Image 1: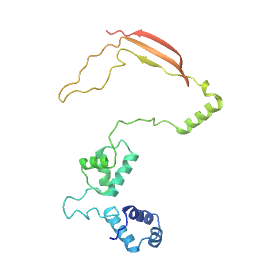
Image 2: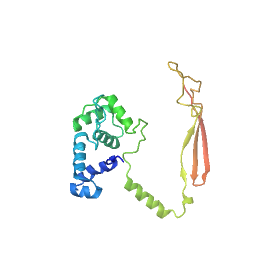
Image 3: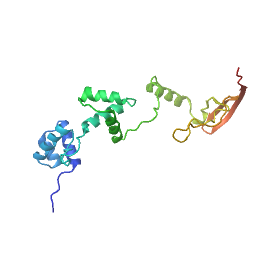
Image 4: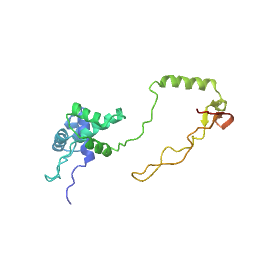
Length: 212
C-alpha cells in the first residue's frame, strides 16, 4: 500500500501553533508528526505564504500567481474592515503594506475568488449609539407591562407615480421606455396607527398638486 503524506489541514495547523508561541517539540507531540515535516512546512509558509508549494505541479509552465495566500488574507481583512473600499485603494494598500504590485483585473478576480461581490451598500447611522438604544429599550420594558400597549404611528404617502417601476429590460442599444404619469395628481397622506395586531386606525388626507 502506498504511503500517504500529511494532509493540508494537518499542515495548516503547524504555522498556527508556531505563531501562537508553541515550540517545535510541543507541536510535533500535539500533532503526532516528525520535526522534519514541521520545519519543512514552516519554511514553505515563510517562502510562499502557504503550507504547500504552489508551483510544485506547474512543471515550469505558466505564469506564477501575483497574489499569495497571505496577500489574499490581507485583502479579505481590508474588505471586512472597509466594505466600501475601491480597487485602486486596495492596489495602493497592497503596495504600501505588502510591497506587492497588482493590476485592477487581478484584484477583481481575487475578490471573486474570496467570494466577495459588489452590491448596494446598506447604510447605518454613524451617530447611532448602541448604549443609548439599550437604555431606551430597558426603560420601555419597565414602563410597558404588556406589549399590546405599544402603538406606533408612521406617515406614508401615495400619488399617481408611486407604483411606477424604476428599472426595466430592453435589448442592447435600445432604450427602455414605458408610458407612465409625469404629474403627481392627487396626493394622499396616510397616517396609520400600528400595533402588534396590525393597523387598528388610520387617517387619510388628500390634496391636489398644482403646476404652473
